[in-house]
Image (tube, protein in one colour):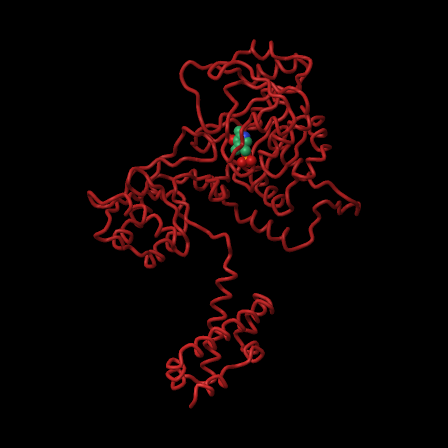
Length: 476
Ligand SMILES: *Cc1c(COP(=O)(O)O)cnc(C)c1O
């Protein structure tokens, strides 16, 4: 048969599109992408045959009209599944940081994920009052729950805590002074620096005291005609140690109120329950902060709260009303799926005792060291088998961090797999192994430390999945 005739075996794009597998693919990926993939795979095969006549004649002996179609369909499907692979991928967070900002912070409870899916896929009564049939308030359900959980008079929510701080400052202190201790002029990460935040919110920063010591009298003396607020920023990611002094919240509130201005506190993580009831290091709760006299408190939805990304503001009704009236509030408002998830997580807080069972963040934070050790020992065996002569694998004691600025100096006892290269091996072998682990179908993110690789087992939930994909790990 001449090479001409093999081309006569090539199907048309229209014929390919009738192939059962591509009909199914059209439902999944849409008509146009499937047509494009079929056309380009057909063209690729034609080019291949044209450029190599030997290939064409060899192929000719083995190929039939059907098998050519099958080939093209298969490669079109492969291209499509590559093109439509989700661009955000699940990873194993074995970094030792539970609330890891770069890995998406908190995992959400199933109930919250289900609530998000409903809000995403259906029309919902987001800003609609079902009783009267007229327009409702997007914040109302949230406000009721937050007031119950914190003792505040009113509440609102925006995109994240950075937005909450900017909105608060812009609503209550535009063109005015905000008093803040020098020791709290911090950078929180991701370029969130308090002095710059103040400036972008249109406020004037009035630094009070010194880096290590600030006294009540510094604040009293600092209040003037143009003062709008006293602000406290929770030391998220650092601690000043040694000869230090700061003014307790209750005293700051009293000074602010004597000067006729509000006292606001940015808790950062903030918690709605006392963490020590779960044997975790204590963190100031939002309720305590309000009881100590804060007029407004801001905190994140996805740090210690264990919910979706959000910035929550609770406090005095009159101040929240001013914040809600700011046009910026509209620009910073949360999406319906986030609201659905946040409401669902807050509902869990109505029964704090059950949180370690129901909230993934607390499941991870409260995981028992014995359980983590047993897991580490089980996983060590197949990992050793895989890494064989090249690396040593040991189960070692480890300290997990909560992360995202929550309790930066407190750690939770855990166990990790420590992978080390044989003596004298260059660090590059460990770095290369870390890269191989990230290339797995579900990338494994470990921690590089002093020439070894540490895999904290605290957050490993899918043990079977982790072990199964070790087969794919290539160790060179
Ligand atoms: C984390 C943090 C923020 C920023 O919160 P996001 O929710 O990440 O925007 C602001 N203030 C403090 C004190 C923080 O710890």
